[in-house]
Length: 417
Image (tube, rainbow, N blue to C red; front, side):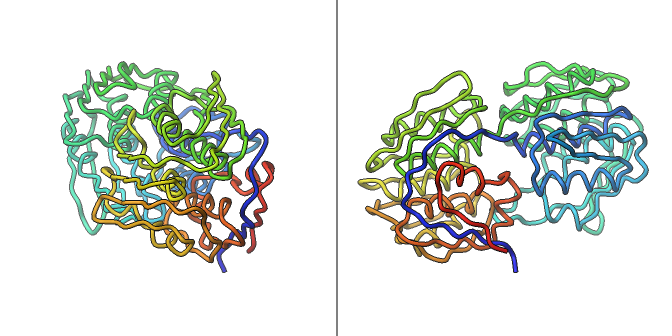
């Protein structure tokens, strides 16, 4: 039986908690190890299910990955296989990040189409159009993307929409292409900038990371490098909301406050007291949150990955709030479970209207995806009585020992097999 979390709610969290490294930065950094025969050493590496899946994928392609003491050491002396099989890709969409590096270094890649995801379709057509612009011959056969190129050539790529993994895939491919590549409408997320920093340490020439226009001068080869993975802004945001929703007093450390600017300003609007330091945020929760409206958008806008957590906080607000989700189409799957705990939320397409209630009631609930799991844990921390969150394997994909971190702040939370 999959693990579950049992939470006795109603305890204000107190103390200090450190943020782990970002899953969404660790995965592309591991994929980048495919670009060189030399070792890529990643420090501050999170111990997460998705990181283990990416390590397994690198091993099937000819690499070795050793994870010890918070350090990941990945090395692919030679690509011995260009196939990313459906069994691995279907468990984690980010597996598609091996596509660009494989074509760039090895000349060919066969990567299973990711298929559906609980929060929406999330197609990879922008990745494929971009690779074709770089000169790859791209076909789809029997559910696999097959891409080939003797040497990729620099090109101007303008994506139809902002895509984080698409930007990362094309940036890695272009790093070894002949000539200069310009990516317009590039994703500006901190995780993209973190990958660019690693690639530049490996000898790539990438300019404009963090802006919508990337310029990449291709080089003939890349070397190994050592790189510290950036802090997880979504875990940081989740821990800050945990302090707020329990009316606690929590200091969240080892984060980059600028990466959370839109979340922090929204929390202040909701009535959460924040003290922001260079690498920390102290949060004190209000007696009752204020209602507010939230619209998700690409970085530096309000992140879709924080929508469920902030909606859970707004569910206890004094008044009516409105959340508009512009990134993913099925991102309200936590709503039905929150309703079991007493939340009053009505959804219509991409809009959720939240009528605040004074308190949540503990209940058995089921997680449907990674951020929905976090939202249900937050609701459980604030609720009267016991909440049991089942299917927490979703949580383990993106949060490193969340229950241990919350427990150290005073939460009554236990993992059961």
